[in-house]
Amino acid sequence: MTEKVKGPASYFPSIEAKYGRPIAEWKDLIRSRPDLKHMELVAWLKQDHGLGHGHANALVADTLKGK
Image 1 (cartoon, rainbow, N blue to C red):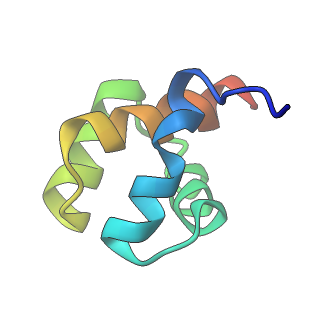
Image 2 (cartoon, rainbow, N blue to C red; image 1 turned 30 degrees about the horizontal axis):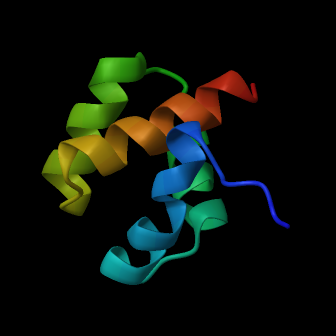
């Protein structure tokens, strides 16, 4: 029996399906902007890349926890 994915990573399959980019590519984009804080990154992803708030927040949260 496989364990259910929880937290921000639970959004990853729908992010890849909706926006057509692998999660690794989104994380690379986020890491390319070390000048921005969490909510600034979320706003940037929403404005410049068309992500919804929940998807952007999940990507940023998961990426920054792995710094």
